[in-house]
Amino acid sequence: MKSLPFFKGLSWLLLLNLLIKPVWIFFIDRQVQVHAGNAAYGRYFALLNLSYVLYFLADAGLSNMLNQRIAHRHGVNLRQLLGIKLMLLLVFGIATFFVAWLTHVQQYEMLFYVVLIQALTSLFIFLRSIITAHQYFTLDAFFSVIDKSLMILICGTLLYTSLFGGLDLLLFLQIQCCCTAAAVALAAWQINERSLISGGTRETSGRIVQLVLPFALIILLMSTHYRLDGFLLERLHPQGDLEAGLYASAYRLLDAGNMAGYLAASFLVPFIARHRTDKALTGQAVLQLRHGLLFIAIATVSFTLVFATWIQQALYHTADARHTLIIRTCIAALPAYYLVHIYGSVLTAMGRFRSFITLLTVSVIINLVLNLVLIPGYGALGCCLAALASQYFCGLSTYIVATRSEGLPFGARSNIAYLALAAGLTLFFWGSSKVISHVWIILALFAAAILIVLATQADRIKIYFRSFR
Image 1 (cartoon, one colour):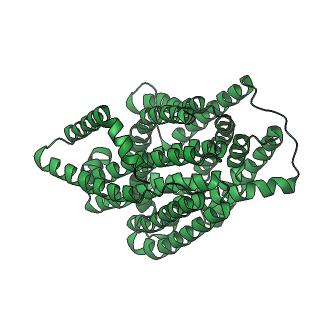
Image 2 (cartoon, rainbow, N blue to C red):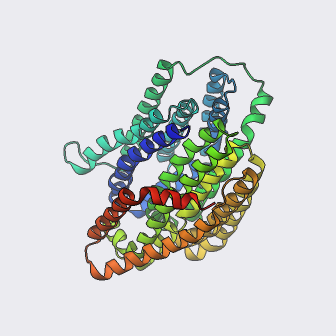
């Protein structure tokens, strides 16, 4: 089965990240915010979002272009592209500090470390794209958690023991720089060991711009769509730093849930690009991935709608009703994020750049207008409402365009099943909360039910969903 290496590598990717990333998000990053306070962390969150908006300058689509062309078995000169990559990282750093100066940012020391981390992360992703393009999916799965594993070991020791003193925001960023640099060195060593760098024909500057421009536009639009709101919130609201801190606390949960979609997309693009002529194979992979990811999204949203107060108290030790509403509204966008990851990957892998860029542009305009209107009066909640509108527009439109343009299974009947699943799970969690007082017991029962169904009804479920075309 040609899709077996893809799903095997994807399984390792998801398993390792489900083991490591939640620990990083909830026991390290969250604890740093609790120690620093919402206002201080909100200022850091705003700088981080600014760097994400300008992140396209650090790569300009090189990694995605490289991934797609190697997967297509097209020759590329990696040494030439690496030189261009280093130049782009310098441009990214200069541009970020220039925009910070224009917008009167004061925390330049913190911004320096944020920019350095983003530059190292971009270089790490560039090296990993070489690995995934050569279909080394399992190896890339291990690289996807190496930097966070190191961070957990070091920062966990500082946060939860008294051996080396405390951990403030600046030290947190300095440690992150060192761990990301170590991950870059390990990836470069593996690429050299496996002789993955080949000397292809050097391209002219005009040809390289032509190749990377669509990818650069996609990265710019997606980073603007996902991250500009956090920076605007800190700049436009009267209590911007505090509101940004509240939004960061909810966005952290969305980011954790979005991890599965982002990782799946990183595998889906090279897989579809390599097998683009086999419509049956790619259609099956996309449909099965959609079923799996939307089940995760629906279960996450249903649980959060019922237990948002418990989540807030467990993670942030507060019981503010507005904070609870922000968490519920933010997480509700998760299914749309997954649709964008799946069908945006299809459009990218198939070279449907114009369609995807058009949809992203309209989504960014919707998001920007709504944020400018809603942030001054509603703060973090306004960001969540703007994201709901723009993300669902983007997710549904990419789903429709990709299925029609590539002849993929539309799965109209499965959409009804998704709605029924959402209603059933919400009812299950709500009913359980009335009978069982301990949320962890409810979660254990839910997990046990899922395992029993998978163990006893796996074949029937597979046949059932395959009929949804």
